[in-house]
Image (tube, rainbow, N blue to C red):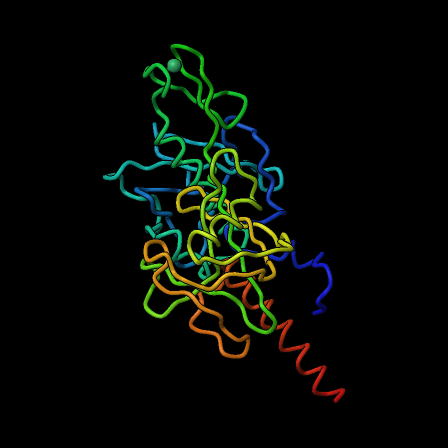
Length: 292
Ligand SMILES: [Zn+2]
């Protein structure tokens, strides 16, 4: 990997999305080829025999159905089971996080989309403006108030994640919420009125007391817990002494590329940013030592 502009890596695969999926809004009566993602109480139902979440099992009568898109000519929909409903066939509930690594990219992409649209549907049954019931739009993923006509769209919460580099080391921090020993890049939600770049610089200053320059966009990842979109950046250190804010960050520091701490789970964009940095530094080092 070169240290030049990243073109292909910005489209690298990250779980919970897949560019090849067709998310067109095509509601309609189910056909024999229709496929369903079953959801029940924040869990996705999995066929453990086939290790698949896309199911051909027809939905029970009256179960709410949300169109998700198409797979070839077949429609794909989410089916929302009530807490007490018996799952169809041999399906069994699994947490969405646990599905990563258990099922293929396409299956995980559909599960991610189903979980986010189901969460939107559940949390927007009434109008936030006038309080009357809101109904699904017949033409797009939205809910429309039956009283005042206000339209709401599925909520996405953009967040930035930024890896600051200083020579052969990078700035990593740990949140009190992380598993023991895990360090990651600095992250935070984008505030109203802010650019992603401003959010990255603000979070670095607030949480770690560090300034950065030369922010470089490195790709994005849907993070369906419940509705984030992670915008990844790498950046170059520009000043400041590292100090953890003691709230969002309990410890932070510079870590050499060949002496990294325990990193976040594989599949996160944070992990990818850190690993790509380490490969870049280690490749550069080995080239320099080879030419010495
Ligand atoms: Zn209303």
